[in-house]
Length: 287
Ligand SMILES: [Mn+2]
Image 1 (cartoon, rainbow, N blue to C red):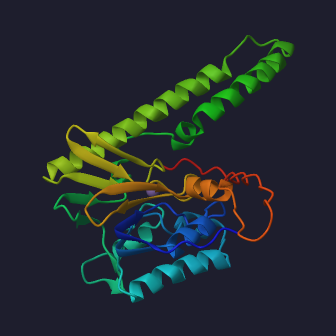
Image 2 (tube, helix red, strand yellow; image 1 turned 90 degrees about the vertical axis):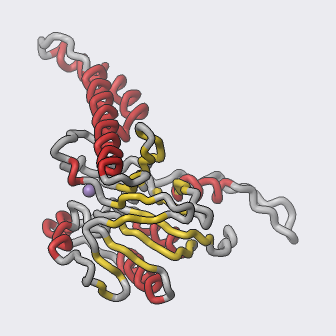
Image 3 (cartoon, rainbow, N blue to C red; image 1 turned 30 degrees about the vertical axis):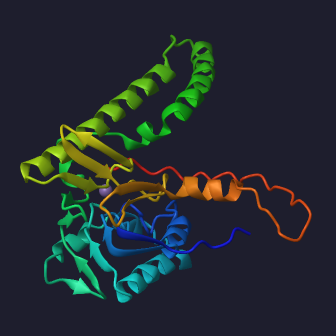
């Protein structure tokens, strides 16, 4: 078993789109992550609890519970926790306000985070920009893998079509087009949010919503997206000196499990092959 590393200290941690209450959410990995970090400030940047799912079918297990408990424990031990609701937990938006603090968690619609180096960032979920951006996140994520699968599916699909007397229609080409459209849409989203930060005279923006972790400059404005915990399991962290880092927890887990285990007493230990990362169930593209 891999030793439990000492907690990593960060100045701030941003995470969003955990979709607790949804069967496909990686609450297990999220809990593992939260247990191994410490921070002065924790920003929950929306879609933390998936109210849409809960309304349709209640899914809640002890791990989802433990995640909430861990966050509250962090708040108790001094972490300033800020909850910014997203579109899946928008029921909380009506409650958000400067005076709303519960169990050490303050609930606000958006925030401005000042980094250690003085840069100021607009922190918001991002769905506010849906009206200017249409996207299909799902296809963008599937990317190469989807394309390979589509090629295979396409052969089969057209064999069936031929047999039924229909002309050839390229499914893979259509999918490729969809992926391209999704990539363009992500681009528009990033530009729209960066523009909003510029409009408010801030140095950058930190958001979530599109389940696509990113850190880049958009016309001189820093755009950072903390990703999600349904597929990619990523968080954004600020170091003590104001440096930001995207943490890919799933990738780190894979690396940790793949690292050779050296036993001080026993003879060479048989290396266990890295466990394949269980594929998270596919999220529905949001709107
Ligand atoms: Mn969202």
